Amino acid sequence: MPKKMTSNFANYLLITWYTFLLINQVCSREQNEVEVAEVVAAMKDACETLPSTIQVTKEEYDDLGNVVRSCEGTIGVTKCEGTCTSQIQPSVVTPTGFLKDCHCCRETWMRQREILLTDCYTQDGKRIFGQQGTMVIHLKEPEACACHKCGL
Image 1 (spheres, rainbow, N blue to C red):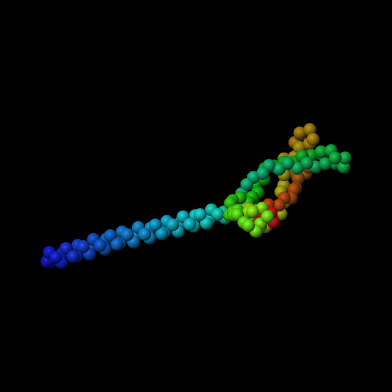
Image 2 (image 1 turned 180 degrees about the vertical axis):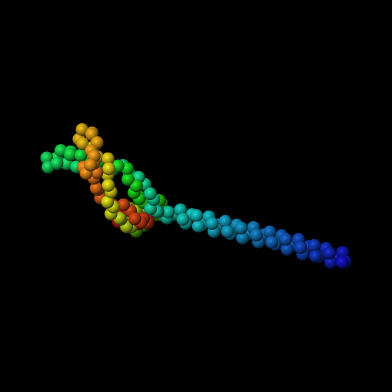
């Protein structure tokens, strides 16, 4: 192969290699920008239903208002937690001079549950056994959560 042809071929390979590296770097940067944008978008409205526990104490009273028994327990429930996009901007139209667009993470649907408390005590703190040793209570918990306009 003549020297000039070898030199041209080497230049062609070199240019092809640099072009490949440049395209790879640009594509990689664009991919990173897309990934960052997706993470930021996900962080803006990241409201979800999460498991939680609460301590419940329920008292039962007689006709005169005296405590007959007190039942308690630790209950697994769901809660709404997360972040929602909110913003405030100057406005010449609103009386306050600002236009507020606030969103809060809260329930979209509630579920009614029946819970059995099994640790019941008399007014003086003695443990109750048998049928009076348990108490059924009802509570509502979030079944689904989402970002909603605040105050509604």
